[in-house]
Image (tube, rainbow, N blue to C red; front, side):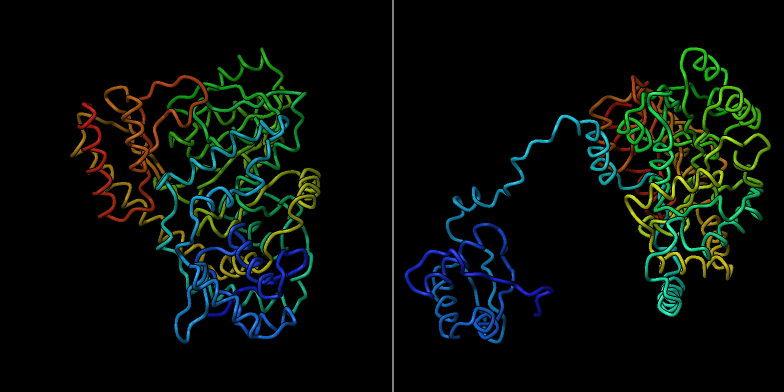
Amino acid sequence: MLRPWPLHIRLDDVSGSTLQERLLNCLITQIQQGRLQPGDVLPGSRVLAEQLGVNRKTVQWAFDDMIAQGWLVSEPRRATRVSPVLPEVRELEKVLVPAHAKLRVPNKLDAMQPAASLAEQEQRVSNDGTPDLRLIPYEELARATRRGLLESIRSGTLGYGDPRGTPRLRRAIQQMLTQDRFMRVALEQICVVRGSQMGIFLSAQLLDPSKGVIVMETLSYPPARATFTSLGFEVVDCRQDEQGLDTEHLYELLQKHCVAAVYTTPHHQYPTTVCMSSARRLALLNLSLQYDFVVIEDDYDHEFHYDNRPVAPLASLEDAQNVIHIGSLSKVFAPGLRLGYMVAGAELIDRIAGQIMLVDRQGNAIVELAVADLMESGLVKRHIRKARKVYQQRRDLAASLLFEALADKVSFDLPAGGMALWLRCSKVLSEEALAQLRLLGFIGEHFFAQGEDKGVHIRFGFASLNEQEIAESVQQLQKCLLDQGI
C-alpha cells in the first residue's frame, strides 16, 4: 500500500547513545505524540534508510525491536504498520491530547459560538427538506465536469478569474432569471457564490450594525440568524401567519427601531412552508422604499413549486430597488456542489466581489463551467421537471400517510411547494418528546424560534425520502407520539 504523502523523519535532538537507539526513540516518540496513528503504514526499511542516510540494517534493527515491544506489526509481503493496540495505553491517553486543546478562545470570538454549535446541530439532522441525491444525473454531471476541466485548461481559466464567477455561468443564470422568473437583470448584477449561506453572510457584511437592526420572522432559518448576530447585529422578530411575514407588525417595528434589513424567505417560508401573499409582498417593498432598508430575499428552493405557476420573486417586482436576491443551485443538484448566486445593483455586486477577494478569491471554475454547460443544454430544466414531479408525489404520499396514521394527533396545511411539511401537534411537545424526535431526524419548532415558542410544530422533510422511507418515517413518528402520550 502506498502512503499518500512521504513520511519525513529527523534524528536531530533525539536522545540515544547509538544511531539505532536514536531511531528507535524517534519512532516511539512520533507514535506517542500522535503523529503516527495506529494502522499507519511506515516507509520500507530501504526507503527510510536512504532518507536518513544510514545503513538499512540500522532501520531493520529498530523495526524489529519495536515489533517485539508491540509498537509495530508486520506481516509477510505486507508493509510495516503502527500496531492497532499500543503498549502503555494509559500513559498514551495523556500524551495524545493535542497541545492546542488547552488554548483558550478569546472573549472577542464569543459571538461566533452560536454559529459553531449550530453547525454541529445541522449535521445531526437526517432530513429537513433536502434534495434526494439519488436523483442527480451523475453521468451527465461527470461528463460536463470533464468538459469543464478541458475548457479551463484550453482557455487558461484554471488561473485566477473573476470573483463574481465565470461569465458563462453568470450568463446562464441571467437567462434563467429573465425567462423563468421575470427578473430583468444585467450580467454585472449577478455574482456566483458558494451557496445561499455565503450569500447571506456577504449581504450582512454590506450593512452596518450601528445603523440598524435586522428583522426576521419569529420562526426563521437558524444559520441566517446566527450569521447576523455573529456580525454584531441585533435581530428583532416580526410576527408571521398564514400569509407570511406580517407587514402590519413590521410597520410597528419600524416606529420603534432603525431597521437595516429585513431577511425573509417569501416563496416557501422557512420553516413553515407558507407562501407570502401578493399584498404582503407589495407592502414589504413599499415599506423598504419609505424607510430605506434592505430586503434580503432568500429564494432557496424556487424550482419546487407544485401548484400552478411559481410566484414571482420579490426582486422581479416594480419597487424592488432595495432587494438583494439570493438563489441556490444546491437544491437542484446537491449541496456539495456549493453553488448559489446573488442579484443586486451593479455597485453592490462590485462591493460583494471585493469581499470575496478577501476570503475566497473565486469559486471553482470547473464546477461552474460544468453547471453552465448543463443549463445551456436544457438538462438542468429537464432534471428540475423530473425532480419536481417526484417531490410532488412524495409530498402527496406523506400527506396521505400522515392523515391515515395521525389524523387525531397532527394536522397540516398542504404546502404549494417546497420539500417539507409543517405539522401541528394536538398537544404541546415535552422536552423528552422533542429529544426523541430529534434522534429520529425530525426538527421541533423550538429549533427555529429565538425566544419562547409554543412547542407544537414539527418539520417533516419528505423530498429526500423514497416511498418506503416516507412510510417508515410516518411509523416512527406515530410510535414516538404514542409513547409520549400525545
